[in-house]
Length: 309
Image 1 (tube, rainbow, N blue to C red):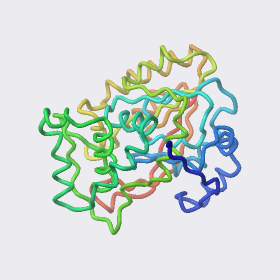
Image 2: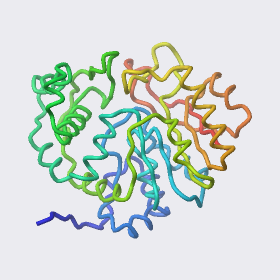
Image 3: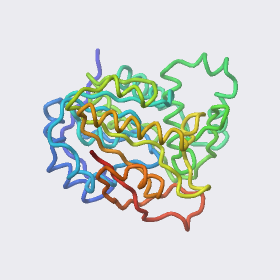
């Protein structure tokens, strides 16, 4: 018998900020949630560097009121998607492990939940699971569900919730110290599963969105940010870094999408390089609190930009 989950009550505890609670209650997404018959309120199932949950209240006024379909080619944690819950959507990313998680949650969430229950919060166990990708044959023998459970487990128990791989593609984040990490967030996984129905999930380059988009579509671009310093770059979400050349390719894509008649929002760092690159477009400044930095005294409120056509 197919398992179901019923709970339509809003739970303010899942929100990170009081403003986010009010924003959701007043938003179009609450209506879309009911129309899609989503139980609970879906939110990012992974902690992701540069996540946008805290910025939704600042971003809301710049989001198009009407659009055809929603496309997000750097989906990451998917905060904006889970906030909007659009009727039509395409989510993509160049990170296979991430996209595999989305696909497994969409198609086999209850099997994933059972698999996550088997993982434990223990330092030696963490490094054993982390090392699975060092043996390619052993790793390839894992099922897609086992790979997704591994990714979520490492994200929930690794240092600072960081996702990072080295040049060989090996996950290299050290063990994190938490009181009681929630490895299996069953209620949210089910809500995310429901939100992903009828959503197209693609593994591939951000450049694919040019052929996937049509005039009137809303494209949200949230790439790895251009670094503010040599030590501030957290762009190794895949073994290919997202450097200056990639930022220039993204700018050309932005131009083509604009010419195509798409509605575009792009997030990036407040840096001279980005400001100069997009000087001919509308640029708004947002303020974000960022916690992912190797030095605690370098964490805090910083400026980011939201660029639109």
